[in-house]
Image (cartoon, rainbow, N blue to C red; front, side, top):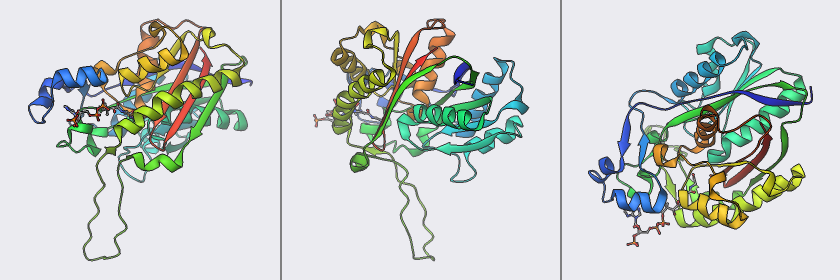
Length: 322
Ligand code: UT7
């Protein structure tokens, strides 16, 4: 085996849609502000499905789209910052539900870069262990972690999951990558902090809601994402112009426009679906990839730059020959 290739893609989102107008009824915000500043028009918010439910729907779609038998899956990785539980891992819940008995399963936490990190990691494990098939999913129910009275974060996020089925290949598909972490900037985006509480009788265990220095993350993204893409291209030994599609984490349509401008690439090469789903963190690149492949917009042999950025802080770009 030389490499791994994407043989199926899929996504799942909750049915319930919350529009900007819906939010303007409970928050001091407006459709005009949200669309102009972010590009978001709607988001799908879970009413009863947890992260593992969405991830399981994705896993079933991936299997139904391929000839791979469930019992032949060697690995399941779920990238998420909103797991159902601290333990068991979301990936283990998925494994139990689809009965992929052989699969090694765990979650990874790299926020909005999680999906790219997870593909990179799954590929390495497949190559090292000579594993044939892996399911990699990005899944989030971010609505669990939102403070619905905070307009600066509540309007930005949505729930959803997406994923890929990776299989062994004799051709090269991951042409190059660049993964980076900026732990010194980690406090700019925090969600789900759990305080140490020695006072055993108080028994209060509450996760903190999402907080973010939006302007700082915006600056970080518009500065570091172009660098990450350029570095990955250089590692892949390809020119930027050879990339057919740039699939960036969907955090803000203005970030996508800025990155396109900085790279001097036409905006038409950049996938955008933030209008429909909002920011779905680890799920966003996976949903975008699945949607675009479903629409037959990416042909075999074309080159994709998959680029995530966010909490950690982190960046992650994979250059993939589809
Ligand atoms: O996936 C993780 C990575 N996250 C990101 O990449 C997010 C990056 N950051 C951003 O996308 C943008 O910074 C935001 C969309 C979060 C905010 O946009 P902004 O243009 O940076 O707005 P701002 O924070 O500078 O706020 C401008 C104004 C403020 O009012 P004043 O002080 O000018 O009177 C805010 O209070 O907009 C106000 N504001 C709102 N107004 C209506 C903030 N949120 C809202 C809102 N509705 N929802």
